[in-house]
Image 1 (cartoon, helix red, strand yellow):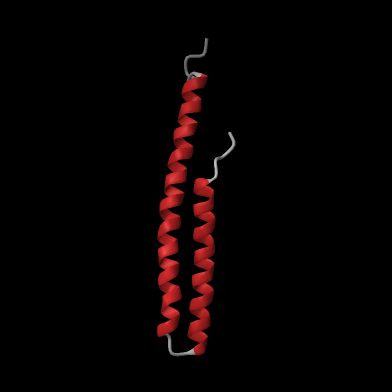
Image 2: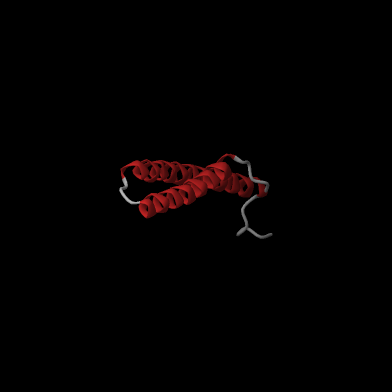
Length: 80
């Protein structure tokens, strides 16, 4: 008998806990990035130059897109 291997139920529970932890991390990072993207997008109104406004728009959009993807993946159940 191989005593080094955990039982299949324990292995499944550990994988479930790992997925839950990964989901929580993605949700926290996604939320932070979304708030940061909103700050960058609001900064458009306080930027005096057109190139600065375009830069803030592009950066805020890209950061918001990444945040949205992270939040989407944190809510989607993963297949085993």
